[in-house]
Length: 256
Image 1 (tube, rainbow, N blue to C red):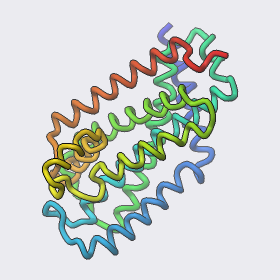
Image 2: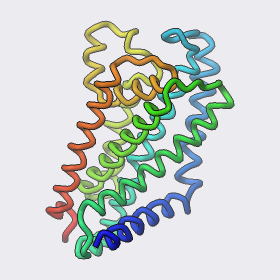
Image 3: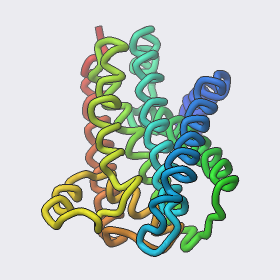
Image 4: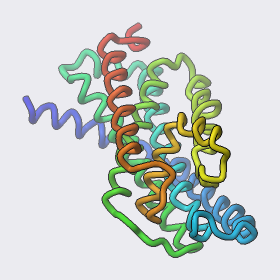
């Protein structure tokens, strides 16, 4: 039985990876071009006027945040579009009636989102090396933060796809929720620059912890403690996983 479940998981994951790999010009190239523009405009042009941020060069400061921003966006959008596409074409019903546990379905789609998020993250990191020399403070912090963040937003994309009733619904959360939270998550600035009241308000934003933890992995500086960062990531991941499992198990919006 375990072998059968493994075959099912591998099949879903391969399908997801093949899906975004086949159209790599649409899935992998655009975020790299976008991040390159950020490096040129915010790093070279504006960064030269800003100088240092928390004792490091401004370009070095924003690189971890830009990498994480690309990972968040692509992990989310990959699962949201893929799962909704399966729901729209009614192919998800084949999985629901097959002897495949809900956990396997979730892990398969999330695995595809994680794969795309990490691929884009690696490509953006390679591009950043043309603009700045990156020093790694802690590899394990980078790896854990990257993996947990990618899993979390893949689950978020899955929840979005379950509730979505049209393709327009897929873009609502990224446009009106994800993008503002990302830009206000400390990608381009340190929370220490804000007044105390705005620092407290900013810490309500969960993306602050992801970017801060990822930046610590590269530069050894952060706005919040690692313990709090990992606690927030794990807590949100568990909540979104259980929510996804509950929704799919009940067939919310999946069974006609």
